[in-house]
Image 1 (cartoon, rainbow, N blue to C red):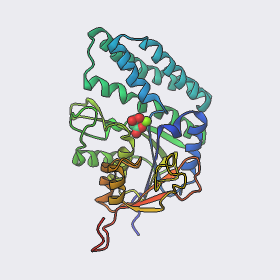
Image 2: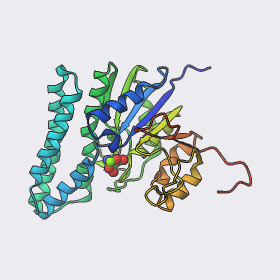
Image 3: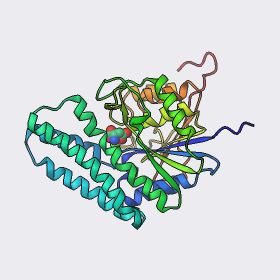
Image 4: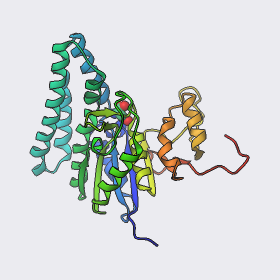
Length: 312
Ligand code: ASP
Ligand code: MG
């Protein structure tokens, strides 16, 4: 037995973080996990926030509506959620932190408005702000539940090229940065990490593409050789068919990643095929579970080599 750290990576999508109640539910789900494991929580933006940020950029560019009003509403939503979640003595400091992030986005939007130009680079900084705004709320909820919890900006860990909108990961640099960071975190501390965000070697913010937070989770899990990796979503795992078309659609209990990739290719709402890559290299399995039905076993996606002759 080695005493090297055991890691659990738990990813929550926007619908699982839509409001204070759902964020508390996410905290409860992580609290059920084994205490011997160092916990890493990967958070998306609160539900609908990425779309709202992108819409603000469109509105600022086209001068079609009041983007300042859009930002004010987003700000109020985050502040109100924080008010419900944070320990009272933490509220002011975290609120100020949110204010700094909102000011940065507002400045970018003013720039777009004035220049009548929106570059892919500016758009990534705006789109990626949603996760930077959600992690203070999630970390505050963990502390209110009695955990030590810290915020980690994945932009400082995940290195990409400058393919704005869906940048390509440099795994050599990323793995080294991820391992170095988490080696310094104590086992009892929950790390709440932004999904989706990354940066170039010049420190410019990029994103991993829409729904890229799943990928952030598997990048971290792969770098650390995580023992338990759960993507918490709003369905009972990967379904046999689209339940809107086929009412008897059932969740699949176990799936090989090659099959999952094929399903994703044919448009099923599963995982982006690249998501499994960091796990496949180390043979790490992934669980997909339903936040609203946590006792359901969900779908287990395995990455081990298939027995010979068994093609997928
Ligand atoms: N917030 C980003 C999006 O909505 C990334 C994610 O949720 O995975 O695309
Ligand atoms: Mg999202």
